[in-house]
Image (cartoon, one colour):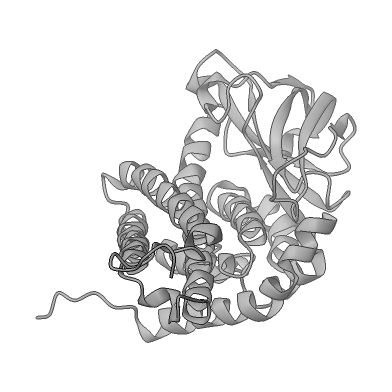
Length: 357
């Protein structure tokens, strides 16, 4: 039996669908969206119509019911068109998948149909200014008061925050009990909840096609029925979400880097120096070969980590963390090298040439 790994016909079709959407509906507009700070909700809803807003949600709950490997194929392909929008879609899918996996029947019925169409947007609220993404150290408080919880605190750098108005779902990790992971619980906070507000838009170097703000809870009242799972389940839920989230953001980095590499290849084939195309200079060929190798090694490792998460392998969490570290580092390096056009446009002269020629 051959040990060669290849995508199934269905996976190839899924990948091609996402590539086509990224090429036709994201890439032509990505620079304008970033420059003008446009969050393209209509385009996001077009992606949702193709099943890209509920990728990991079970079919019984109205989703596509796809695997984690399918997901990284989709997010890499979308990121080749626009990493910013692909990354927001990955967060939205993480929230939808989390509610499907841990939510009550009422929560699933109330929210998943609207999340699947992106009539309702979503944001994942874990990060805090004092603890980053360390869920066990978060300080936002949730105090039970009758049939509500009252939340106080703030979440930092939240993607999509404030964009959906009242039709926006925030998955919020807050402390209901003792210090440490056992005291964390997860909540659905609706966009129109009393006591919910937002900070100013963050000033970013790029990534401007998705709004990023602080989410602030000032005696924010949340119905007790919006608790996801039980009190104390929040850390477990957060960790489950982060395994998939690490794969998704790695895939977005990979797609962005692949696009930069492809642009670099086209540029070097068309740009000439000293009577030759740039891609004919051996020193530059070596750099391209290194970049191509980094991309393929990263993709192979990412697929392995996704497959491990799909089968709930004992080392899946470790592999997902490794994949995020390796793939995003490689993505940065490749993108950085690909856009060093000044170097590419001035290759070293052949060793037998004279300066005064």
